[in-house]
Image (cartoon, rainbow, N blue to C red; front, side, top):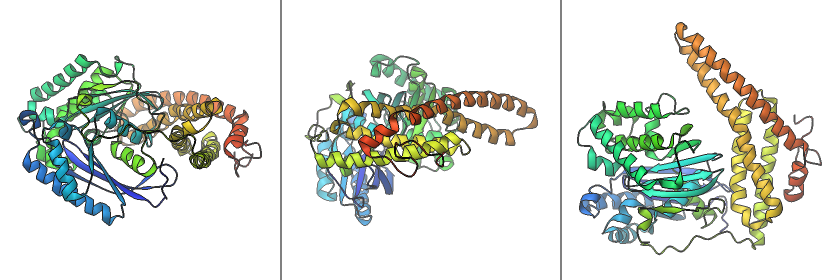
Length: 496
């Protein structure tokens, strides 16, 4: 693992079939990334690829100009390193290597083509650094030329598959009209459903995932058309799809403030979401930023290996069958024998455990609903550090502490979800007609009962942790005593 100062800045570029995107970030010294700047350009590099088998020369010119501009922006922001990956369009095109050679010569950016496995791992690593992945989760990263599906349980990636389904690809095949006709969108959804049924990706069956997380532009732009992006169900996705059949690309671009070229392919992307949700029937659907650029920045600024907790047991799919064009070496793991790495991570983990322990008393008091949220955020950051550091410590005592960090996140989830829902219901009630308020009141009463039961269970669990051996074990292993605890690591009366 490479050690960098907190001031190190790098830029990560994702060259997709629809867009080229860049995130410039700084290592924050705590295992995370602070965003400095970003840029995005709709290039449609994959336009016409299925028909011709090659990248269009005009699209290549636009891509080179975009990369040149991004490289200059990165230098202006102090980036000392620019890393870039190209995905489905470049890896599938007969002239993909020619495009990359030209990009290296004219922009100075050394772009590597990633296959389905590497793309999934980078996406998951970046997502896990910013998102609670407790429970059974399926991540859908819908691009212009392919869709990566990733299954995970309690923050560990268990399988992934790349499908030849993309918003640009399906638009070219099925969508002629503007606005798209309902039968054209139905064809996109049917094609997606057929591909999912034919491959049975991830070994998942209907109803086996708690959450479907849609990442990237498709999810972000779809959410702008939903009344409440915190509570998304299949019915909501279908309503968005129906609305998209009434809007031209120009009207859609104006309504959600995106480029018209991107608006043109969004309906097909939402049709893919609908097909995935219909297959999976998750308890809820969530939207998150794409993790691939965060994963690239973590790789560039903290180390070249995918976090050891984010393993993949089964990586298969159409994109994986493409040969590796870049000769990238196999991923590396942190050197467990590196004493400096071990001591650095011991200090970082100790600091993050202290943050969790200091936040728990506020969550237990319950006056501020953000107290629960703060513990969950702190525990997710703790888990990310412990994932990376796992090879450096003896599993006999480290694994139980690692597992406890994950359990804390999950224990507070039921309360936090109901806090957010109650807040939304109360806001909705204040704006609702008088006739609708009794129904909303009944729903609020039910959610309040559920919250009370969940909070009772949460309090029992957290008190059990604080009164048990955990504080003293953390003090012994990581030196976690601070002002919020006494010498044994137990919270003081003042802290409570």
